[in-house]
Amino acid sequence: MTREIDKIKNQDFHSQNAEFDTIAAFSTPPGQSGLAVLRLSGPDAAAICDRLFRPYGDKFPLPSKMSGYTLAPGIWADIDEVVLAAFRAPHSYTGEDVYEISCHGGNAVRQAILDSLINNGARLAEPGEFSKRAFINGKMDLAQAEAVMDMIHAESEQQTELAFAQLRGRLSQAVRSELDKLYGVLAFLETLMDWDEEEERSEDRVAVSRDLASAEKSLEQLANSFRYGRIVREGLSIVIAGRPNAGKSSLLNALTAHERAIVSDIPGTTRDTIEIDLNMGGYLVHLTDTAGLAVESDDPIEQEGIKRAQEALQSADLVLWVLSPPLGSSSELLDEMNTIKGILERGQKVLLVLGKDDLRASVPASKDPASFAAEHLPELPTIAWSAKREEDLQALRTILFNFIENDTLETDLVNESSVERSRGKGVQSQTSAVIMTHSRHKALADKSLEQVRAAHEAIDAGLSYDLIATLLRSAVETLASMSGDDVSETLIETIFSRFCIGK
View 1 (cartoon, rainbow, N blue to C red):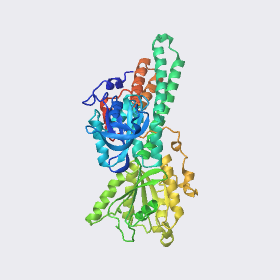
View 2 (cartoon, helix red, strand yellow):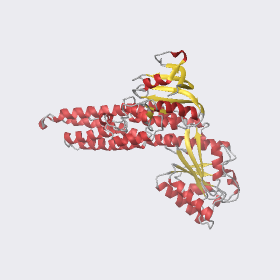
View 3 (cartoon, one colour):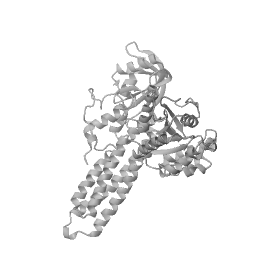
View 4 (spheres, rainbow, N blue to C red):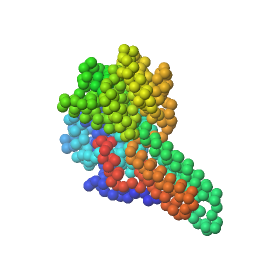
């Protein structure tokens, strides 16, 4: 298989022979800090450090790590007291000679040291250039390189865990395993194509069909893992919706454990969406409280709030629809049911929260949300909730954990005594599972699965081995590009341009 990477290595991505020059940039973010780390990588890194670093006691040659001073070119005065660490090629992040200078984090000191390196033969690195060199030099594949940025941006325990697994090569190893299987089928097909038609045996087709069925199942599992991986990487979007004064803001405050929204008995208190990010047991959750969805309103501010609420509902992974006593009029209830049905028709999930459950005893059956839900929305998962009962909040959290990990809304979990008992029930939550987190990976897995499925159907239909081999070659090329084989220069440039300078 032709590797585009070989061509990429010989191309001039930057105007100064970037694959052979020496680059420098701070790996730590800009701004004042106690310490800052400057990274230098390339063939002239050692020579530049020899000129600009004065060790304690003038000890040369440079060991792998030592303390000393950086010098200003021209006047050769000390700039700062630093620690210099050397990582010799190929045992470094980029596969080249890499030096890291730990200096004080003042802006003036940082800039002076960087200027010294630039004036002595280095150039400022472009965004993601250190990681791109690591990719080109075979230190990591493309999937692992993407995980570097995921590690940097991780905000929750689960995000960190998945990003680190991908950085360690778990996804890449799974892809290589599937590729090896497909290569084995292709080799067998090549052998069969060398035989005469009269020598064809039915058991050979059965063997190929069996192997393709296995590959199809594995790829399908890999593609399906993206649902969980996307939620972990991007966060779960939960929107709280319902009519005015249903108790939506009380639910928001309970889930966040803070008084983030004003709560009153006056309908329409919340006029705008309130968006909060929270860490829920290691998962990132984007929680949105919305204005009450009134049937009619002449208030332009309330109308804008309703519009924003409807927009928030469009992108929700899960809608917590709050229905509280006393219920509204028949027309208002019909409007709520139609809104809920519209959400379900878009393929989104809805959990009906029967709010203010402690007030049920004081309202007639005709105004009781539980009775209404049982009669008109019997298939909708439902949970009773009262802001006055801590066990209700615990039960809701249990349901939310289960939804994240298993994609189900099992309200029978409300009887469990601990949220932790709902954790880890699905295959997705196992730390050893292979999980896809990027839409690029998902698209490639889906395409490869489609091609393998077509090959499987073709072998069962008795079509030619040549056609089946062609379909499998396409599947192999598609799947291989997930880790960086046969990818375009444009894609590589796009991926690494999203990195920060110094990484």
